[in-house]
Image 1 (tube, rainbow, N blue to C red):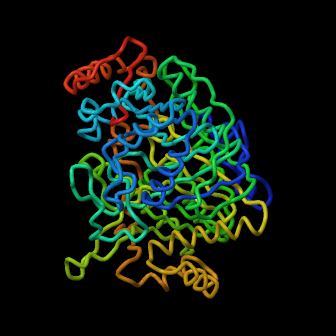
Image 2 (image 1 turned 90 degrees about the horizontal axis):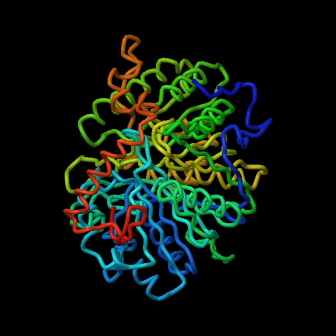
Image 3 (image 1 turned 60 degrees about the vertical axis):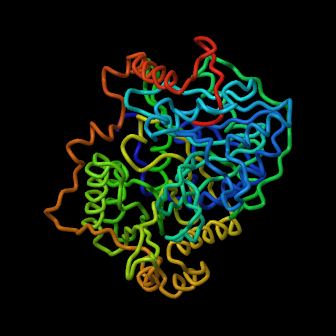
Length: 518
């Protein structure tokens, strides 16, 4: 792998740090507090409260954006996201909101772009929504973050768009789990991280840099403000170093940045006891090869993978779904010591006898030995390595108190999937002396984890699907790295869509649009 190093398995987490600035991280920043918001309902409510306290500047960076969603659908009188953002700037003359969304996101996700034309926001001078066309051919801007006054930041896997809200119960009959059009969607699990202090300033630097790359505008930093940390955040760490790792593709003769993959390989290489993964996709050959090597070691770590069974779209099912099955098969073939489990979560559907509904795993999370955690936007697939832009954050534990917090978080996540109190899972693990054996014992309910229906047939395929380079490429195609863009093509598509939506640009460099969708 060009530009990447496979860390030696002799360098364990207990003996040295995983995070190394300039190697697998761009920068670190101290957070007075860093915590986690589990699932969309908790994140959206905490975000609404934090946004309401914004003083001067808000960044919203995403793959998609839908202003017609409600952040708090539990409250039927609550405004839509677009209405809420309008109220923020109307009630604070010093506040500006900058929204940057992947240019093709609104087209990819359906009807979002047309909604931009029907909102008051398109003419508001202090709400600026841009569609970012500066990306690799067939690539996307996949980073997902909100930064408030450079003082508080939310980073992870959750965009401010439809089909992200859900509660930890993931009830099959949840009536509030609807799109703005009223369409039902499946249960969905996700994780977002909140950070303050210097860590929030680093996130703001990334957001400001993205804005400059997309628009040519160098936005001024806000004055120094203090924001209270979201009280809803769980598993909170104090005075910790937060590392920021990026993926940036090589385009326009720029050098690729592959910190997210390097960080993933380094943490997996150093694992001693346990690797816990939640990922929407599991189709990375680099990761699968490394985990297969670790599973073949007599004293290697246990590996628990939680992923999604059913993919959306024919090509996604055919290629990414098939690659997931092949990578799981590879690991099961390598698992000579019985330390690997691969699951997808389900909840009972009481409307149908003996039926379950799958929970879509949208989280992108790795916990190693309960002393390292990585959360962000990058999936364990090929394109997150060097085609899309990605942003992950990571923390290492330095004392028993921090390690216990992370243990509680891992047990809490698994307890959510199992429908069990986390204390029951912790007790089962203590008794079994092994997480995988504990899961074998307690994973018996209608709500729980189901094993992926992939055998370890020695003749089964374990190489990537032949169409991977087309559907899930690892880097921009040569020589398209040098092309200014399908950017020209994307701009034409965008102009036609914007014209149809009744939108216009103020000039070639500046577009004032509504905060009402992308």
